[in-house]
Image 1 (cartoon, rainbow, N blue to C red):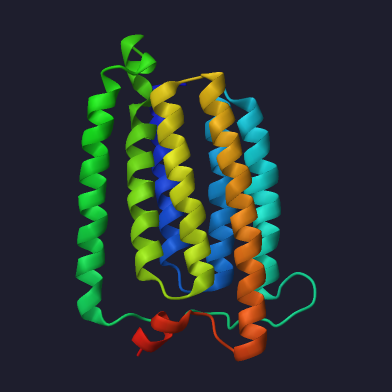
Image 2: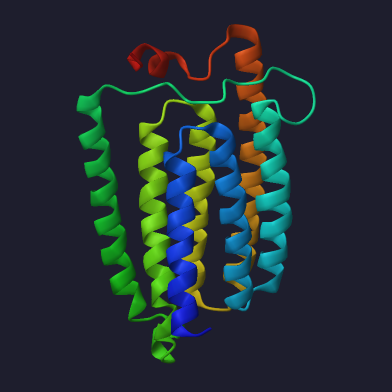
Length: 223
């Protein structure tokens, strides 16, 4: 994979993750996640992991996407959620969550810097994949912040999936085409799918019973 292609893929992944996590229009956010998952599949293919690319398409884009759109009420029967997220945390809480995400990013970056000395990619001179390592760190930081900041449970599900993708991308970038690491990532994709399906089902049930899209303490914090 050329350095230019690596830079373009890494930049697009960060852009789509940002669009997914910051857009308050839930349908557009889910569409951005689908595009993000498909681009992740392309990244797996270019990282010499075709089975992960196929798993990302089926588990990440198709099945997880269906669960998200079902929670929105766009697939099957059920209550349709409001199209926009109007929940907001008090403004004084936002800087704390940004700071926590930045600190976590700095610590993860230091860990990656330390581990990269023993990485087979770096040892073999394949430093052209470093942009994907950087994008993995950025995506993890965005996902962590969004999961801590958002009140809407569907947006937290999106953040959960984006955060996991960043972790998997970082693992693959550090380890290279190692079968054991690819198997671990595949297990992670299955776990993420199960969590997304259960979360979407619980969100739909919660909204149908009580008209809520947040949990107890979060509901009290929203203005």
